[in-house]
Image (cartoon, rainbow, N blue to C red; front, top):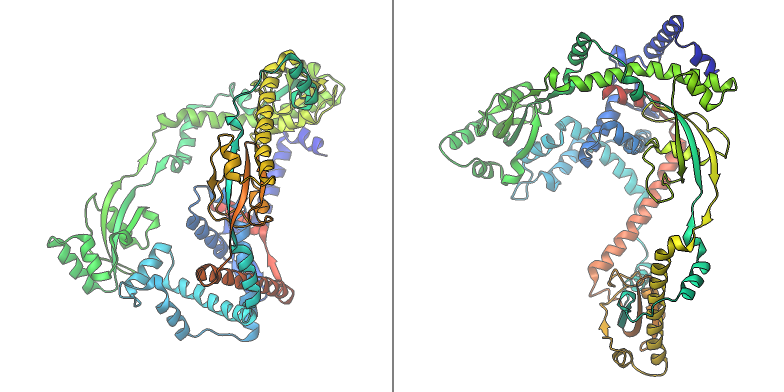
Length: 628
């Protein structure tokens, strides 16, 4: 069926039919894109609680900006950020729906109390400060009504959560036992034998090298290689012969003009006050010569850092009056007081950049490349269909290429990583990883399936020969064998040296003397826990667990790929909840939060069975693409 559609899609009748189908799907399936009802349709529904698409995408955008991700919204969605936002809104909706069914209500007095007690909204004296409140909301891009709505939902949710999690504090004996286990520490005397310090190595004989080579053949194998022939059909190849008229290029430039425009920006500081009289007073003092930041500190209690609003475009400011006064100001200017929904603002313009637009001449070549490539896609599609028809009719790769005036490209030898027998990248291969992946899955003498890459290119490959993995000749890998033998020999001798020291401690010799007799120095570790917290990053990973199995005065040996360590248990440091009260309290709180989180997760799962959840993911994705 796919081949049938491809072979006939070039007819004008089918193109018209496809256009009508696409238009009907757009209007009846995702008509909001054209009809402008972006926020009207419920994207998430939990019981009687509904979130429209605008609410979902606005929350997604707030989270994306808060995380400071320097990627597009579509890329953030592909990384799972949109999934997380949808999950959080569903959970929020579950608790809101349950609150409705329980008849929970959050009064204005509770909301006012929460706002007043929030430290983020308090001035220097520790009391609620309206100017600080408005400043924080302004910086967060939230109106007062939107913030109150969010807070009301959070309070209602916390009432349900607290009802479930009350009494979730862990039993004191459990917390005490876990604290003693976690926080008990060990101190050891240790001698480190780094393998790279072993220098008195004998030179390997030919017999040593030959024996090592045969014993470690798996380390010196050549991978499987394939000889490949392939045909490439790419938009770039075909675009080179496509000409675009000058008037078409200029029309495309006009259509894309927003892509070439860099918006004007202002870097600003602001003083935000709650009434006009204070704003006028502030302005008078600044005009009289007082420092902008000093006046702000006196009237709002905010430090200079809190006044910084950063670099903004016109669209990022709230209210036309604010936009106009900021963007009509020059660098270094201090604006007259201006009112917005959040209060009265005085802005200082630290720097200013005007709007710029790249000229047609600057971007002409890129526009030509893009348009030629787009037009070449039609030719690519036709050639691919013709190639499939040729091959389907029994033609070889070479015969099909000749019939279609295409080139067969050859790769003499390549492994599954795209490397040649010298270990160098094969530069004549397509860059897309999917090509070598498909080729590596194709048997000798067979053609791969048609390979389509993300950049719109198509490839048809044939594996001409497969060379199975084989042991490389010793003459070819001798240097690598010698290097590997030397590293292993160093490790062997270093470990022998450490074992000799450990064996002497078993005979009753203290570690300090056993180490000193071979010219090594004793060191003392810092106190460390069972998890190794306190040890050096280069110490073997099992040193801590081995040390916790020793009795005082006993010794053991631990090794990694680079060092052997002989250690003797010097001191056991019991956990002391009185001296480490903060650590004990943190552990208790961690246990409480874990138990509480488990209870809330269980409740959330139960609420899903009580309240029907519907997520129109296709609608959300369509509107996300449309909004870009």
